[in-house]
Length: 397
Ligand SMILES: *Cc1c(COP(=O)(O)O)cnc(C)c1O
Image (cartoon, rainbow, N blue to C red; front, side, top):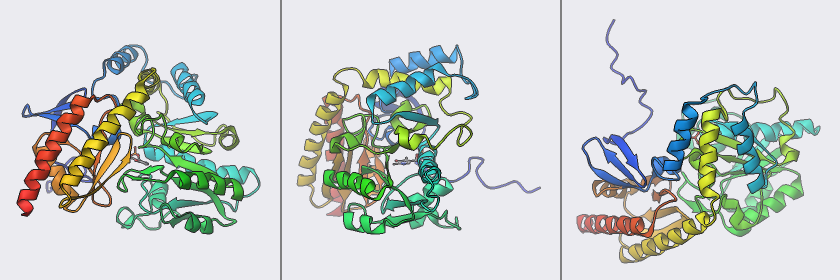
């Protein structure tokens, strides 16, 4: 038998030639002993930095007590987590999953089933936005709707109608008697750190009520304090009927959830949906520990303050480098530089200089640092970004 030439790890990712062996707060250390300031957070996941003492202690304690228990039985940590989410959001009920895509998948199933239960099985279509990202399962891919991620996966799951992000008229016109829900990210993450306007989000709520469809916010990336509030939609003063969360929710432990109002959640009764791992004791205890930290008085104010300082300094850099940077965009600690050069060139140069950032759509370099950063981290990052932009300017000249 000929030896396979494929890597034992399936080659679905384009990886940097970098191996991290240790994390501490806002820093990562590679296998050569180099230190990096981590403003990527594993794509907005390690929201409290690496190895936060409260998370480490909680996980270690839980690991020595009970890791997993099926949803066939009561799970007190899961019940407490759900109750706390309910207490702090629009939601009345929570389903626990293990990832963002699964959280969104639950939202999609709920929307279809909600109308089915109400005697309108013809209402199954979901209106989504161009530039969106909702995950990699077959249905969430269809919701994402971008050519490059759908390529080769025909037939595409039916039931998604895509409109321009931010165009209310186009969205309203796309709603028909077959529409079940509107699905939108309050700030598009993968699509290039594109915040929806407050008025747009408010008008989505109005449109959903007017046409009797559900409003779903995908807060997988924007949620859990990322924008300076527990959830980004709070800035707009409107609430969805259903919401997906994941990424920062477990601070690095895989957990996602679908939050919903009673009206919507009632559609998923016993046997209608499930997950083997979802909300198991280990995941739930760690997510509770994340909430312990975030719900401390002053946590979100800190995010807002440090984010404002970071943004202001980024804008200063952008003004000094109009040759390389178009603009600064985002909300809270979800910030992007829209580049005139290849965003990958800037990401690479930053990495060379010890700062981790992540590329996003629309040629944007994305900064999603841990929410616990201080002004000193901002200054360190800004110095590296300035140095990197200077070097790239020289290269280009
Ligand atoms: C990352 C992301 C997802 C998918 O999350 P996974 O955990 O990778 O499945 C879905 N929606 C949004 C908005 C995301 O940013």
